[in-house]
Length: 73
Image (cartoon, rainbow, N blue to C red; front, side, top):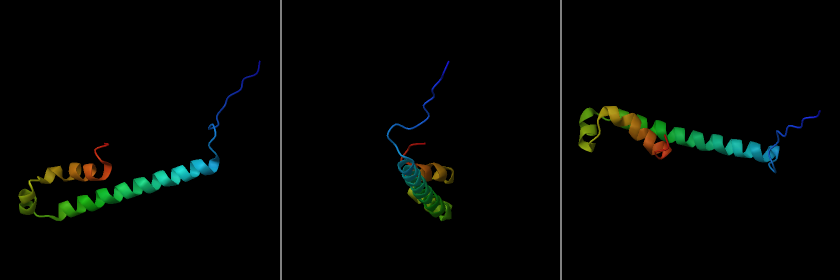
């Protein structure tokens, strides 16, 4: 008895998969950069400045995640 297992991607070449992988990595790096920048800028503010903005220090991470990942966390 013979078995045939198809492990290929229908119609997608190796070059296309590699290009999609590079694009995904670039998008993730850009989102991570937005997260780091937002987090660092908010974290650098004083408690008084944060209070003026209506932000508690414990909210900084959530705000940075929302800014970078569009609530997709």
